[in-house]
Length: 239
Image (cartoon, rainbow, N blue to C red; front, side, top):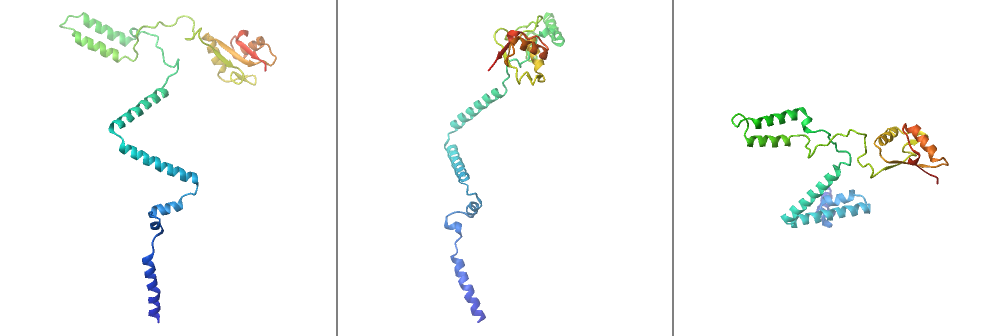
């Protein structure tokens, strides 16, 4: 009886095991896709983004496979052009930031000595001095190795300091919150105003009137900033 019961239990199990089909094979998927779907979120936005990313990846691969080598070269040139434009925008130096050197190369001791040596070699006889070809090469190499090269000599400014855009542009400053706040000067603002005054930069102060005449405002600003502010430089507006 015991053997019969064991056979009766085992034989149906073997038959059922043969007929078992994994659920991922029923849907025509792999086990990785089946279990990955169980672990994913049911958020429709995430699902939509993943589907869109797969489609874009497939389109990109198909485009790369179908693209001609000439098209690849053109695309690379476009990328390099865009990178060059981005570098120019990133490395752009605003007006006034480039240094201006107010001296001639002859005033530099090492440069002057080297030029004198080359001129002395030109006056020597052909047997003891350099040839004309060598002198030309030395002159060209010397000019290329100079840290600064100038088309013309710029005389240093001996008079009063002037703004480079003098007479063509000016600056308008909002006093409240920029120059001072709560009748206290903001750190550094007085130094900046005095420097603008020193450079003779046209300067106009905008402020709320509050019923105070512009002459009194100018006197107050002169005391706060440590420089003379004229009444004509104050534009007082009363809402």
